[in-house]
Image (cartoon, rainbow, N blue to C red; front, side):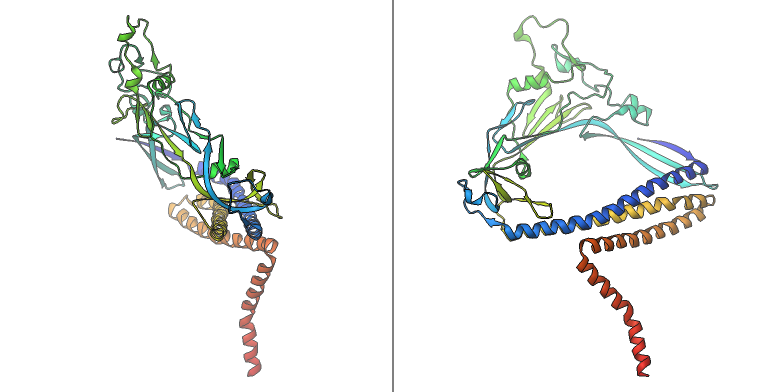
Length: 435
């Protein structure tokens, strides 16, 4: 089922909002302009650092021993990244020999979704109809159902109560409370990533940034002991789970509530009664790890480890690829990546400029909305003007940046443009002289 709300905005309120948006538009316009200019400098300097690094990179064929001859040099090397010591998750007691161990938590919650439709009214007012729908979903964090718009889902079908979990199912030793004063989840665990204390690369060791750059994450098949289950169970929310005043007379009769609530399958620890049929408040925690892996690096040797190469322009460069990758491909990929980032930021900067201009011109269409069809026409016109002016301004900023960062190329382009612009006049003059 869905829940619908209708809101009204007067013409005066819309005008106030539109003029207030002008300041936001100016900020977006300036931010886009700065991004476009800065990006051209970043692109040129990053490209220069890549080219400089390529000129000085040397192959290091043997990483089995620390060779002082390579100290301070930028090297291209291939080998096995091997963790030294175990990586440990202290909460779940999971430990293994891996480069990285990652824990990700999800919560089964009611989630609110909304969809709005706005209609203009004669006189400049505006009516917005918003439809809210609700679904049970796995989310990355608990959802505050007290903010739901539908009163029914804010109360009876909320995330505030332990829905459907009874004392009988839990057993006599522990009981879940049926009502609580906060969003209901059986437990809260932060997403965390743990790294091996040290990762060797032959006789060398990877830097912290290189350690984090090793990929190839795979699901970790878990083996959780009874003691680990009890430890996890004890971390469940004490406001939800309590011991009764009278405990069983014999410890042999005491049930094991952790076996009812803590389930382990493959790479997942599930906290809840029925993993195959999740209930509000259930929690699942998944684990992935990065095992020893073959990698190729380009980095500067410093003693028995590595650091980024700093080019003469102050920009840094280093690369880490999975598997065995040739030096030419690694530098080609670096240049491609730089180009892609440049175009992405150009598009983002241009959009910021266009959107900013659109907000600056927005009051014109709102003023004309006293007659809806007139406001629509003005809106189309201001949208087109914003697009054309924003695009022209963005190209101008990029051209100015090129004069600063690529003067030779910019000068060549300007010269070609001038020649092309003058060609018709030159041709017409020659025709007159010939006549």
